[in-house]
Image (cartoon, rainbow, N blue to C red; front, side, top):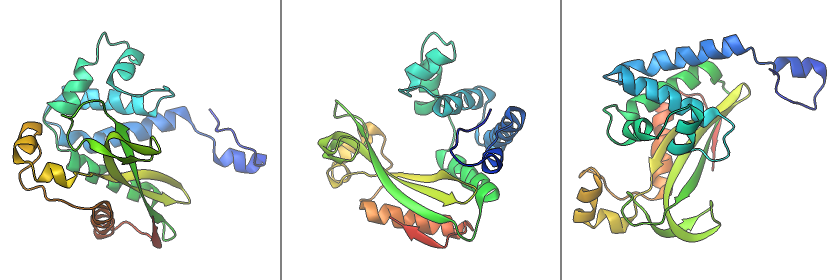
Length: 212
């Protein structure tokens, strides 16, 4: 398959994607994160979930991805995200390492942005009425800060941090009920961004400058 482009044929050829090579690379990525899972089943479900996120689905959630994969319900994917034993930070480290190996360039840049997921209830971790660019106004939402590495050869998300409002930090009962670690302290969004940028640079990611 070929990515559509308005450039000349020579440049178009550079954007050609070989399906077999793509699957080889995808397999290499799954092999890289495999040691982070104690059992094979969560790893298999993680692979399914990633493929769903890469698909052309208009809405991407456990229900739609499960249906796309021919599953009767989203139970397996929901179990992966809520109860299965695996370390998300270790997988993050593996992803960052993979992106570094694939895209690392002295002219690369680190891009920080935030996004929000609109929520109806009050039980989801860190949810409250707050501004989110997703809606363009103040809404009941959960907000996270993301770090992207962008270089001439490609770009990818390499880190994330959930913004936990101070009202959550100050409410011990609410934190415990939602499973927020006791050691979690309040951090502003710029502080979360700085932590992620520092972590990426400490991990050896090349970046000529950081843009927010």
